[in-house]
Length: 155
Image 1 (tube, rainbow, N blue to C red):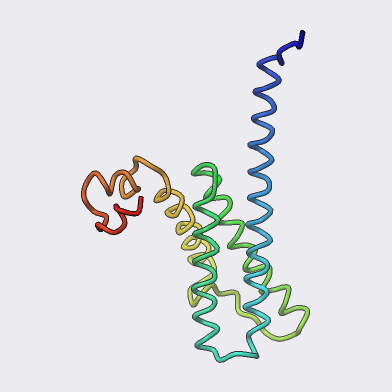
Image 2: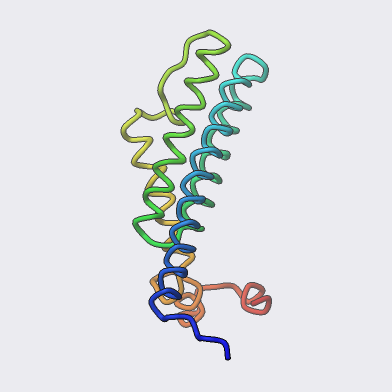
């Protein structure tokens, strides 16, 4: 006879797996932010300013949106998005310190505090859009006829 595991042990194992996943998400958000910010700072003298401005805007937006949408909760979406944004700033500063030069603490043309708030909000909005049953989520848009026909036929 095999003894069944205690329910409390199973619950602790599930919680432990969930918290490990959250820890990995936080670490990946920071590492990805460091990579994006470092790459942008390293490209500063190599590419034209217009290309760098597009890279900074698109890369930051995509990073924060992906990190925020993959979070396990609303608070974690905010934490992951803010951590990815801080990683972008730390990556920029690190590369500038290593390579030398002058860096302005700006996130795509806005002041630092406004930039952090803006990018963290984008991550939270990406999380909210991914959820089901909320305004402007997938099911809500289908129920109100707001998605186009080709998107409905694919899902």
